[in-house]
Picture 1: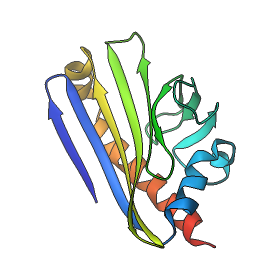
Picture 2: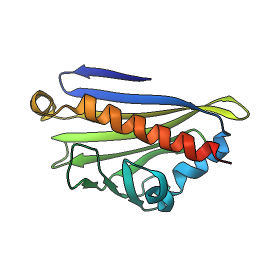
Picture 3: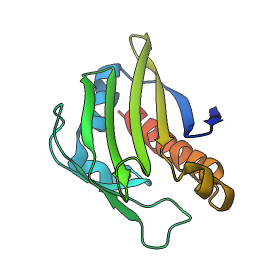
Picture 4: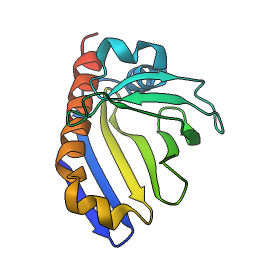
Length: 156
C-alpha cells in the first residue's frame, strides 16, 4: 500500500506493509545499520550511531540513479520499537530537504505494520517534480525495501 501527497513546497511519499514478526525483531533489523548491505535494496550503506542528534552517512541507490546518492542526515526522532526519523538536505538547506521515517505500529505480539515515508520540502520542489518523477521511483524503492525487510524479519 502506498500514498502520495503534494502541496506547493512539500511532498510526501509513503509505503506500508504488515510483517509477521515482533516489533523487537523488526526494530533490531532497522537499527543494525551495518547489516543494511546484506538485505536493503534502497539504503545500501548507513554508518553512524542510532542516537538522537547523531549525524549519519547514508548511501542510497534508487533505481533511476546510476551512481546513487550520499546524504549526511541527522537523527531527529528515535523511539525504540516505534520510530526512527532522520533529516538532511540535497544541495543547500531550504532548497531541497528530506525527512525519512521508519515507523512501527504494533498490531499483535508477532505482527507489526511498518510504515516508511519521505517528506520533501524546499524551494526547488516545484521545479524538480516537473522533470523528476519522485512519486513513481521513490514509491517503488520504498516498497522494495519494505518487502526486503518483511522477508528478513519473517525468516526466523
